[in-house]
Image 1 (cartoon, helix red, strand yellow):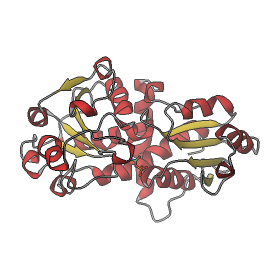
Image 2 (tube, protein in one colour; image 1 turned 90 degrees about the vertical axis):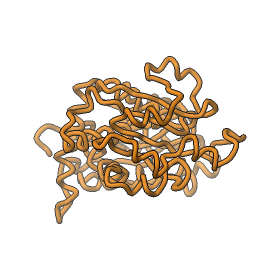
Image 3 (cartoon, rainbow, N blue to C red; image 1 turned 180 degrees about the horizontal axis):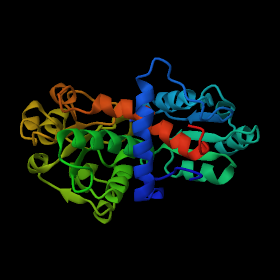
Image 4 (cartoon, rainbow, N blue to C red; image 1 turned 90 degrees about the horizontal axis):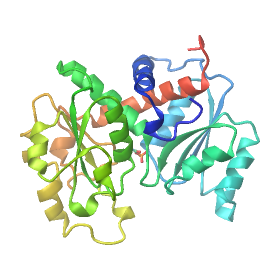
Length: 310
Ligand code: CP
């Protein structure tokens, strides 16, 4: 695997290889000394042209714990702020002998374009409202663990409900692709104004009745209302959004006893997800964050590491 740009790049066997190796990497997180020599001598640049807490930090930790040299570049503080193009910036850094770029950018498709410019590997850390493949991998990791602990099987055959602001989400596209590859049924539920164009062609079930969908789901993944990407009103008021589409304390009582609550973060507590849901015993929100480091260690190792170096 040279690049990881889309969840569609991954076959069933590649996903399972990443998730299984991530289980081993997860044990490193609880060790007193969190260091493996696998990527010694490799250089990874985190290029985040959009803000991030979870993805940037976990990629950086993943690289460091695998002994790679990791650097952080953002638009502010680099020559991009003086007008240098993204292409010239990437070519400049690539010519220094970098092994991988991890890129987040507001432009959908920008990370794919970047991969065509450089010799190094490129990982998509979120491009606009397009894709966020490692988020889908870490979500799958957290849900797979939960289902196994609950004794309800694997992701194959499970029903995953994804609800909220789907129109502005890169997480939903990557999750639909990845979960389909793993054999799960994906259901999507959102106000009509927050459904992405062409969603009927994604192969997911698009449902109107949020309350009925919650009752049948093995996991309910709530997505953030992305106010910063909204140039006009997509729903009448926050009160009406909560009533129709929020994972309220009442709604979580109707979930299957073995079902999980997910949210990729950052959360709007009290809007798409109540604190009762975010902090519930069956909430995987922090498990997803923890899984992010293990899954990104696994991906970096498989992309940049060598046999027997683990
Ligand atoms: N889930 C996610 O991508 O979070 P960050 O924006 O904090 O990286």
